[in-house]
Image (cartoon, rainbow, N blue to C red; front, side, top):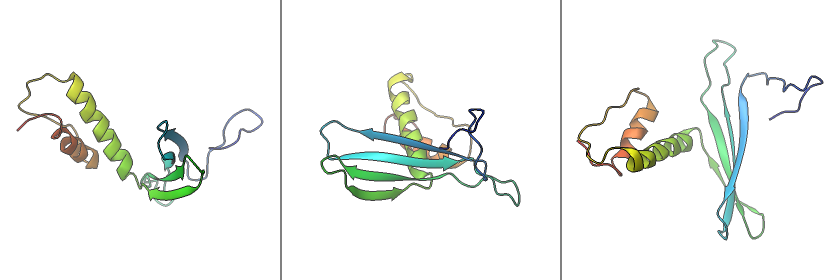
Length: 123
């Protein structure tokens, strides 16, 4: 988010991060959602990354009223990424799998393995 300067560039926020807005809805459903997510912010004291953060605002499609706020803190993003990976694996992986290897040890790797167990039988 931000407005452009006289050169057409978007000036950096003081924390160096980025903020994204996304929205979505299902036709004839009760709600629509706007997601606000930030990431890439640096701690000025040690140059370490702050964790990603965000929120989802849930609105009524009928009235436009705000019905809920879901604080993301990155967890819903990590689960959504793992679910998308599992869905792709279900449709594109070989039909016979006995073992799965995951490169990486963080929370995303654990969520990937957790989601895969629902769509692919393996040991």
